[in-house]
Length: 530
Image (tube, rainbow, N blue to C red; front, top):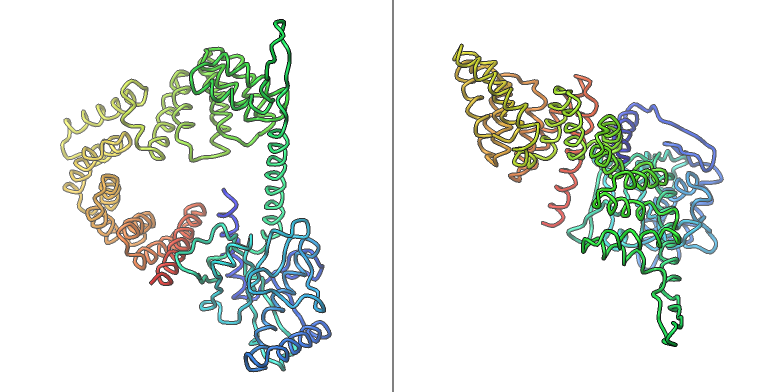
């Protein structure tokens, strides 16, 4: 599960608890709290500052309006200041006259990283926060605060909720401003961690940039040969580039030589080991390739491609068990890489694990249907062809065997024969017009062929037969999203969310929620663009 999906899931839980009042509260500065209460002397200090600002700008706007506007902003800033503490710059009420509408805080360790705070009062289902393109450009995150009480000069206490945050890199503007609701935010408990990781990334990139700069300004070394001729030796930073150039030309031995020189300078660079491993693999030296991939893995344990490549080298040596272990680790790191499933299927096939191979080939095809056209000489063709032949024999024995037609349709769909699959599902429907799954499967095949109208009809028919068919709602939502009917798509995804929740299908639930959120963001952008 990626971090965005996790924070979205936590956000939905937070929203549910926000309506019931069951919130996390911590009064320790620097620690996370969903609820912050500001009152007493602390509120008085904020009020005094805001009245000063109101007096200062009374010629521009009515005093009361300026006061309320500043107080909303300062209340939100106080929440963020308390939660992030020394991670960010503090508000100095004597010197700092608040944010200028562009940046409210910066990271203490890096003043170039801005944090924008947005404070709003309103009902949970209608409150919206908005940012401009300039604010998005100048800040790393936008932090949203929800104020429970209406802000005015006589209020004695405020209950403030850290409604969530959005990294500005996730905000895509088609116009100069965008608005979003609480469901579109990420859970506030991940804010500190995100900023710390953001800072670490900047430090790393700056370090790499500085090192590159230092390397590039090296003066080329000169030597004199036996003939008293002056020779210029390339500076060291060229070894990686020379290695890459050689690899691109197919000069793998020279590539290895250059990568080896580069590793003397950068002995902890996993990418150089990886590139040298690729060169050894191309030369058929699989043992050396495995050694380099293993060294890269020791430096970077969470790079799926390293395990996939090492698995390939082990497969070439006939070590299918080790290859399967590596492919499995790659899948654990990233379960959406089709080649990892396909390679593991090849290895399982060589070990005689036919059922495991079929399952992996099937998953590879689900992720990347284009694999189907390349399987003429691979095990998948043999297995699925055998399946189809057995179903065909069953149909010949009993032409009214709906299950055989359905299974053959599934096998055809798995290898990309969508026309054949549609024919088989149509036969199932002719035998049993109340088979919701047959309509659903035929809808999937039609969708894969680009027949959105046909797919929509089949999903709708499946839902008439089974109104609780969550997958049919989800896939019909995909169709309606593609044809531009976002409102209907959102309605279908929300219906899928309800059913997935009842059925306890958490992964599907989170995915459907994510689709709803994405479409709502698109809708808000469309409205602003309009």
